[in-house]
Image (tube, rainbow, N blue to C red; front, side):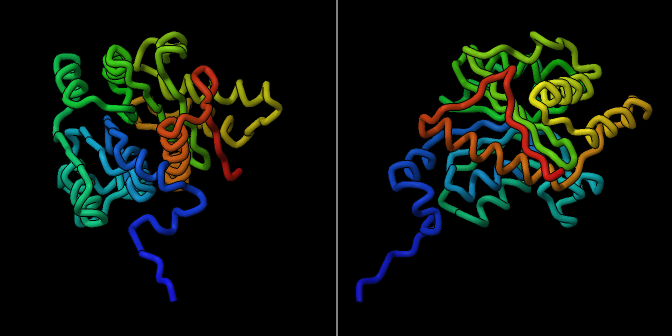
Length: 254
């Protein structure tokens, strides 16, 4: 009886051709921020993206564990090192690199230009203008960018490239950025007759909180957006059609 060779990606068959599997294996991904990015990189990695560089200077905190891809044993460890170890435990032959630094206006060019990346994921916190600058530097190298967002019971992803609008076309400061773009998504969904009243209520409740508090996030959206980003990465890597900002991808369980 003929036997079938079992490989790491054998269960991807039918969904993904051998040619597509090889294409994504060699596709080079740069990830800025491995908070929300922590789940995205593992999902993409398990699909077969084996060339990933992650950059973040933060350490794992207990408050991260409700939604980020870390363990209690990772607390106080560098996020990048924890993710590196996690991915290498899945596939030790993959090309995973990490830099345990905070991206700044001064070092962005150095780190974005380290390799000829095919795509970037901007999962940086909007506590400064660095996420906007990250996009600018990536675009200067013709690297498209995914912007993922955790909306609790839903995920949202914007795609930025040289043909799209940029985020700062609509809102050019980090202060109040998250609230503004949730409002943007709500308004756009209404125009599509897809009103999400629960999301409107969340935004209203958040607007009444102390603005120094980070936006509320759930594990549900972390995994939704991980799947969304992985699907988008696959589509871009294999030459399929995509939606560019100001259009966006949105998926909700409510």
